[in-house]
Length: 512
Ligand code: GAP
Image 1 (cartoon, helix red, strand yellow):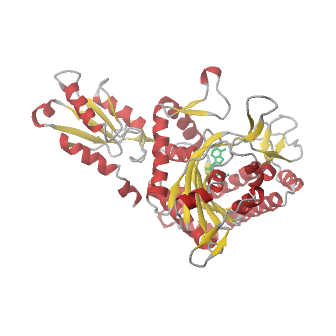
Image 2 (tube, rainbow, N blue to C red):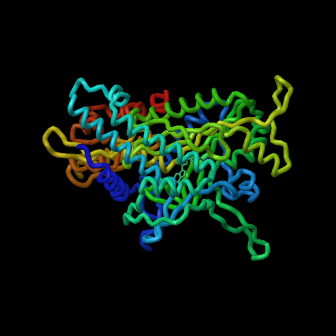
């Protein structure tokens, strides 16, 4: 059953809470804006996504290793990285509503509306032309669509240029020319656009005199750069090689919204790939392709991903793009691929006075390596997987079911085991099966309500398999295994269960 995207998004948030995936932080005190806690199922799903990334990046690549650097770093790190001077977002206040917005997001949302119009034209034409409709041809030849597309592109280009030149007056002029109003109140009474630094400051030290000003890291990447030589030397790594890391990052986002899409405390999964200067173009293409393949491997639909080249390059990049995902509120950034040149290592050399160079044994030369970075938000990936998986289905008999079609390899609980009834020794057999399977998989037991209701409960929680123990089990040691997605049931000997489930969550099958 197709739902309106806004309704779907509301359902995602409500479902995440009802099924123990995500709770508002400190809810008993009415919550804390844009901060969320992961519940019993959410923590498992998050861990499984992290593992899926870690295994693909570290375990399967002999030239990539993983580290775990501290959140606190020497404050000069952030001077060298450029974050103290350049990690800003352009903000604008509405004088009437007193609400604060990101000026660039206001413009981007305006362009997203134009893109929405293109989608509507496509839908209308698809209906009109029926089976003979050729979407590609329509997109490239329909005059109205081309006009919308060119308009959107021109606006984004101008925005990118103004931001790149720090021409904030032009960003304001653009907002005025496009007659963008406060989304909440419709007022167009705007202040000037100002820059706002996103880093959270804190202090370390026990007395006021000795306390040192620190920042909570706004990206995990710098923990990798400052450890470049430690890892290279201790691991005897040869270029090209990568260092990966997952961990918390903090940004004082001007507008944190859209649930876990934009948070002030979030987790990143980043990999810095150290390469020879001059080879960045080919590695950029390599990592774009490799990362997209990783996303596609999860089966969320290839049509839900697209690349978006950055108009405005960050202070450290010579090329950059996003992998965007179709979230319930439209296509938005999920992961960034950045060619960071030698900006970071070169800058840390200057600020620390230490050499951060690689000695190439073949050419007998030392150089500061270039870096290709892949950077994905774990919470954003969680939202992509969760929102895509939550579906309302109408069944053949006209009834409906809510099903969370999580990729089996990521599902928090792989198997639910039920006794058909709570007597006749069936619960004991069910618990014996759990005792055996729990060493390999996360398994739960459920004996409450009719089996049909238990199936529905597990469908909504995202459990890929349900095993039912019935009276026949006592005679022939077989059980029913029911598949969440197809709702098909099959009869299997108990001693074949492990292999059946293992095959469905085998990393090799998913990542091949
Ligand atoms: N080291 C590069 C870097 O941090 P970024 O594009 O600023 O690049 C990378 O961030 C990824 O981190 C984004 O693609 C997004 O998935 C995630 N991310 C960034 N800010 C976020 C926020 N406020 N909340 C949740 N995820 C965020």
